[in-house]
Image 1 (cartoon, helix red, strand yellow):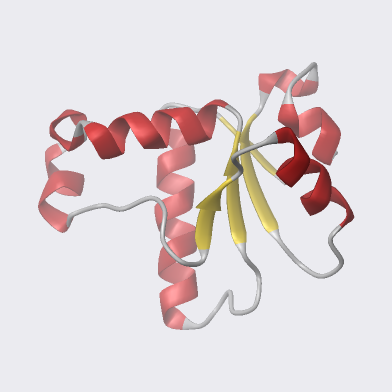
Image 2: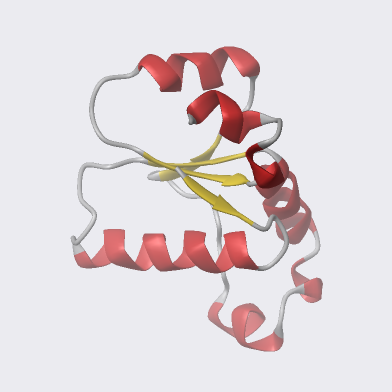
Length: 104
């Protein structure tokens, strides 16, 4: 579980994890985005002109075949009990509520 600020920091983390996956340094561990992180990434996908210029130029994509959004509470519950490694990036909520509490 990587609790992160939903706007900015979480996107940096997802892009960094995606790069590690491309290099084969994070093989076999799916990456999931949950909470407000997912919503912000969706908004950036719909409005890429709002991304920093450097990310616009590199064609930043937050979700792909190995980095996916959690789309429902049922999926979240399934992930909690899924055996094997996984990385979950979620808005932190200061661990006082929301998705990260369930994962923690």
